[in-house]
Image 1: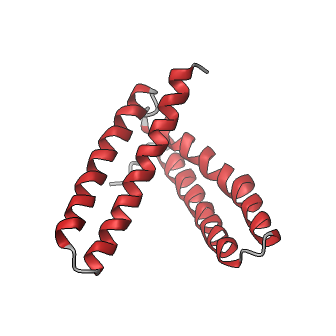
Image 2: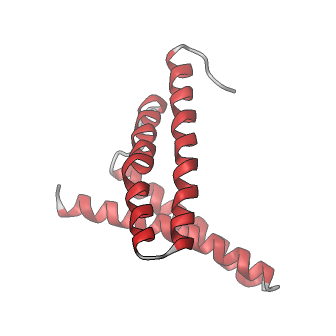
Length: 131
């Protein structure tokens, strides 16, 4: 993998994380009555989304719906079979119950996502589009 490819992946991850953080920051600003700051965070989050999308396009990471479903299935499978079980175990060893609970909940939901993507792929392959 070239350095540029690694940089694109790193930039995509960073822009994606910034988007989510800024949306959560905006919610907090709204809770505290800071509407103008909330709008600022949301505008910045939208810009971060544009950056992330551009990086993913350059990496040719957006493909056909079928290919995207297959990629999502693989990603979700990795999360609930390898990533989160290891995180849950480590959090347990570290005595971090809140983290373990957060990982466990995410793990359960990733299994649902996996099944939903599999169902969508099967429907697509059978010519049944969901509208």
